Structures are given as structure tokens and as C-alpha cells.
Amino acid sequence: MAANRDRAALIRAATLAAVEQRNQLGDESAQDLLDTYGEAAKAIAEHIQRAAGQDDRVGLERLQNVLAHVREELRRLQERRDGQLYRRIEQSARLGTGVFAGALPESTLFAVNHSAVAFVRSFTAADGLQLSDRLWRLNRNAAQVLTDHIQFAVINGESAHQAMLRSMGRGEGVPADIANAYNDSRGGNLGRRVRSLMTGEADPLSGRGVVYQAERVFRTEINRAHGEAYMGAAFQTDGVVGVRFRLSPNHRVRDVCDTHATSDRYGLGPGVYPSREACPWPAHPNTLSYVEVVFSPG
Image (cartoon, helix red, strand yellow):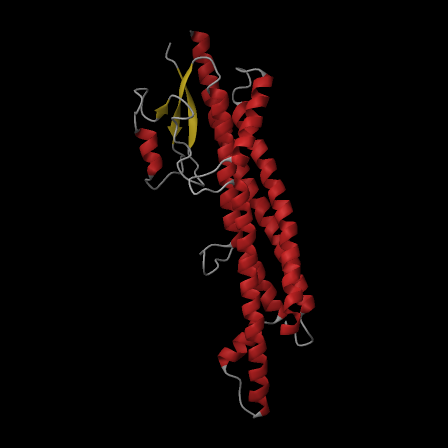
């Protein structure tokens, strides 16, 4: 009995360490994303600068060339980003099963890892979307945000350029709104705006930067892989009667997670669920809550 208590204590300690590593993995992935999106934004901005004419303005005749380059750079970004995500998912699953390295055979842990990764890649959420759909939406959103902004700036800049020529031809001053529209179409300014939109500045529709949306998907799926692998191994471990829904130490605002963490639906104690099917984790995307194995008191 003492040996069982010691094993349970070791697994609980390993659980907390693995959750901390999972969170660190999410932080690292966020930095990787920022770097990846930043590199793509820099390449687009440099092309815009090259496409600008002698007056440092992207004219209407160069618009399609710029947009074609944006599409190609976003395609390369997609390949790098998706590869990063799939590697992080596999790492996170291994962290989840690693907790049970001393309790289950390596062959079992390998099978659980494989199953968890496959589950994450094929899981269909309540909104009907799978991971591939979410990644496609990231691509579509990035292309739409950049295309809409570049087209607007270039077309308005072209009109402003013509209006400036007319004003100067009449010996008149240039109105501020015309000057601003012209400046927005200049290569340097347009490139800086693109880099800002890609790496953090909120766009008018979503209220978030393009990279934030990718970070949200990454954290959600990294955490999902960890939890699925952890529970897949937990429920194959002798003496396990359930998993407890735990709130993150950073949990500040009451939501559905509080309900799941405090409800005693199965007579096993607050927040304890007897099977994977019964456990409501994760309660929502981007959650930092986690599950902890519960052993039989005997």
C-alpha cells in the first residue's frame, strides 16, 4: 500500500511538471510564430518597397504584382507554420504520456502518443471544424487582411496622386486627407503597415493581429494533445479511478471551467470524472486548465 501511495505521489508531481512544460511549449510556439510571421511580413514589405516607383509610391499598375507576391509569401508561411504546429503537437503528446513512463510499457505509451496525435488532427469541434479547417481559415484571414489593406491603400493613393497633380496644377495647396492617402501608398509606409498587421496590430474586423489568431490555434491544439495523451495513459494505469479537472493558477475570471472543477457528478469528489468520455476537459479553446489523475484510496 505504501508503494502505491509513493507511486501516486510521484505521478502527481510529474503531472504538475508536465503541465508546466506544456505551458512553456505554448510560450515557445508563440515566439516561433511571431518570428515566422515577422519573417514573412519583412519579405512582403521589402517586395513592396522594390515595387514602389521613383516617387516611392506603389502605383495601380503594380498592384497585381504585389498581391501575387503576398499570396506566394503566405503560401510559404503556411508550410512553415503548419510544420511547426505538427511538431509541437507531437512534443506535447509525449509530455502527457511521459508522466506514466514508469507505470506503463514503452509500447503502450507509443500507441497512446500516436492515438492522441491522430485524434487532434481529426477532431471535429462543436462548430463542425477540424484542425485543417482552422489552418485554412488562418490562411484565408491573413490573405484577406493584407489584400484588403494593400488594395485600399494603392487605389486611394492613385486617386490622391491624381488629385495632388490637379491641385498643384492650379497652384493650390494639397488637402490633408489627400496627402495622407498619398502617403499611405508609399512603399515604406505601406510596408510598415503590413508588418504591423502581420505581427500584432489589430485589424478592424477581428480586433486582433493576424499572428494572434494563429497563436490561439497553436495553444488550443498543443494543450489538447497533452490532455488527450495524458488521459489515454492514465486510464490504462492500475489503480486509477478517474481524473480531476484542475484550474490553471492563472485562472482569474469565472467561467464554465469553475463549474467542471467543482461539480461532483459521479460521487468521486469535486471535479473528478471516471472516464475520458465523462470528462468535459477542455471546456473551451485556448484553455490553460488541465487534468490530474486520481487513484483509488485503497
